[in-house]
Image 1: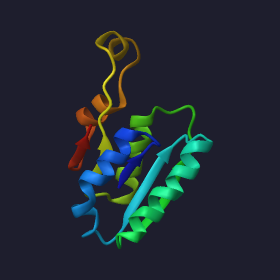
Image 2: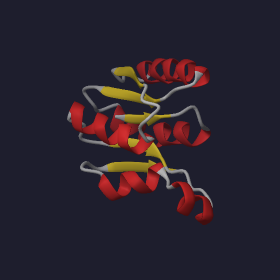
Image 3: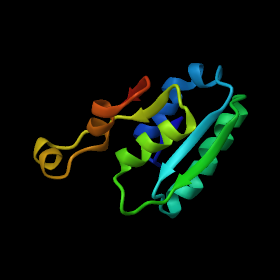
Image 4: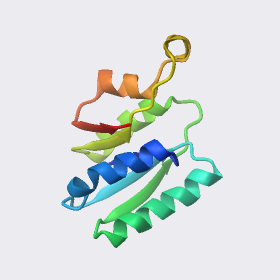
Length: 118
């Protein structure tokens, strides 16, 4: 599964994981609470993956009352995911303390291997 957000870091993570993704039976591209830009970019990254022979399916999770990390962790559990590809995005320490961070939360609670690229 790819945790997708239309950012340079997420695009880099997909690029870095391409050798693994090309070997997968199925890849889920998961976007949490996507805005209009993410909807389009999610379809574009699935098209890009398909051009490389990757069987990719786009799924949107809309749950504004849940945190991004919780949504991703639930999707991993619900779909029996055996690898999560995501970008690692760092915030300042002050912001991390005040608001938390999805990358940190996922690393503390993940139940499958995670490939992080930044």
